[in-house]
Image (cartoon, rainbow, N blue to C red):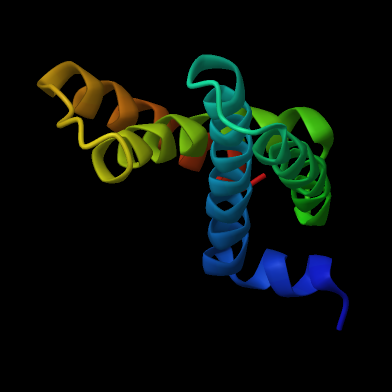
Length: 116
């Protein structure tokens, strides 16, 4: 069974791929952020660049065309960014961040998982 068939059958797998992609994009970008904004070592920037490259591969495992995958991924990215802020930056989201991220996630679900 091909990876596309497994993902099509199991939305949990595709959801997990979206979340892993988000964590890699946010994490890789965060390492570059640390290098530039916090004057950390360039090794963090290089590691961030590698992570960002690998992140770019993960969405290709999704069973839909590029536009749909990235539109749906945007919603997952929004929620993941709020979670990252809570865990890493210790920043509690306000009600508008919570509402906005829920709207984005529900939009992603509709875009990616609605029957066609």
